[in-house]
Length: 135
Image (tube, rainbow, N blue to C red; front, side):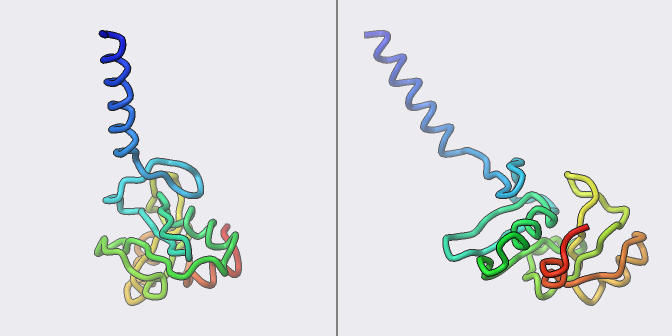
């Protein structure tokens, strides 16, 4: 009788843990904090994929550009999720993501200012990066 109760408890705890499993980056597998300043999302026909950094999202997008219907990134200054079309990405700045050097998404109007202030390269669009590649 005791073994049966123990077994039922273990199964219930396992199911509860599975329901609260953390989301992982679709590129590198790192756990994703939805409140992270670096989180990014790509919408495909099968659903939305989450990424821990812009670099991971852009890497996935570049591997299959026709699959992506919409891309959203968190703007560096406002911390709001924005469509990729509204942002520019700055390479090589002194701002680091949890994975190290990354492409920093900044609203188009302030991207050049960010690049100057943080020693970054000229801002580029997401589509340019997907076409031309990552460093």
